[in-house]
Image 1 (spheres, rainbow, N blue to C red):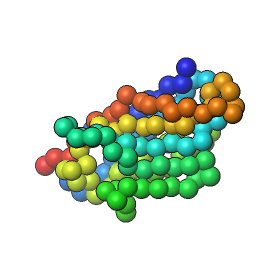
Image 2: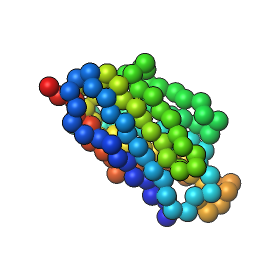
Image 3: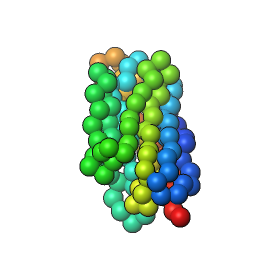
Image 4: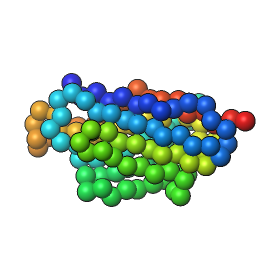
Length: 121
């Protein structure tokens, strides 16, 4: 009964920017961490960025210096600001959340359906 919904994807030229959102809803007691992953056609899904409960962030080398992950605790929402986008950033971007749903001591991972980001001239 935990739902994650991504939004904000689209078509952008190289060097452009997008802001992705991931809203968590349903039966949520606590979100310990949230992260972004992406999967390009014919490739494995790869980790992009993570934000932890204390607000600390981590980035994959591919997005370091160009991407920024953030959160709005009150809205159970996280964001991924994508700047200086490159064609190789083209992928479906998925959000993941580590959530305590009905038991405050038991956490599980939940995934969204993804949002398409296409970077092309």
